[in-house]
Amino acid sequence: MSLLKFFRTNEQNLCVTSISEANAVLWGKLFKDESWIQSVMDMTYTDGPFQPIPILVGANLDKVLFGTEADHELHLIINDWGGDVRYSKGSFFKCLQDHDYDPEKQVVYFKESGLRLHVVDVVQPDEMIRTAKPAKLFRNHDGVQATYALYYGEEHPVLIACGGGCIGKQGMLKIKDVCTIVMKDRNGKKMHISWRNPASRKIEPVTWAELDGRKWPTGWRYI
Image (cartoon, rainbow, N blue to C red; front, side):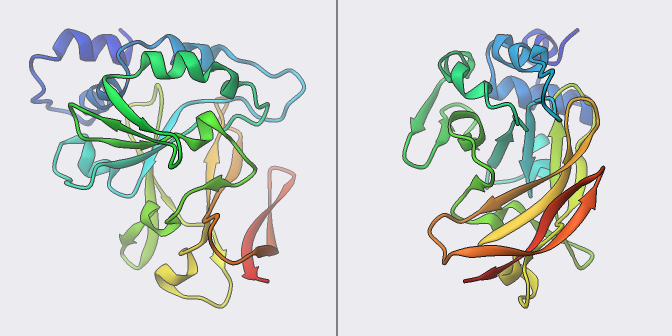
C-alpha cells in the first residue's frame, strides 16, 4: 500500500502509533492525489547526474509528524537538476489538499492542517533555493545546527547537520542568509542543496568540498 493510500484508509483515525504511520499521515495532509508525486518518481534523466525525488525538509518536522509543533512550516525539495518538474506545476497544485497559495512568497497554506509549505523548488527552481530566512530550517541539536528531511517512500526522517554558511560568522548568524546541507537523489547519490536569502547582501562562494567527484560550495562571504 502506498503512503497516501494508507492515509486515505485511516484518515478517520489519526492517532498513529509509529513514525512510519505518522509519515503517511503527513504526506496525506499535503496531497489528496499522488499522481504528481508518481510523475516525479517516474521521471528519469539519461544525460543528468541526479534523479528527482520529493523531500520534506524542516527544523521541526519531527514535531509536526505527531502534531506537537505550533509552527507548521516545511519546505518541499525536488532535487530536480534536469529542470522538467516545473513544467508540471499545474498538476502539482491540483493534487494538493484544499489550500491558498501566495505566488509572491511561493508558499502554500493548507486550510485544514494549518501547514505552510514552501514550494519555490517546485515552481521556480534555481541553483540555490530562495527563502527569506534560511536559519529557520535549523534548530540546535547538542550544539550542532541541523534539520530533518523526509524522503518520499522512506519510513523514517533523517537528521542532517548544516554543512556550511557565511565564513567568519557563528551560530545562527552563520546561516542567516545562506546555508547548505548534504542530501541524496532518488538513487542515493549525494549532493549539496543550498538556500539563500534573495534580499541579503551579495555573496560569493570561497570554500568548497568534494563529494562523489564533484565540488560543492560550503562557505560564502559577503561582497
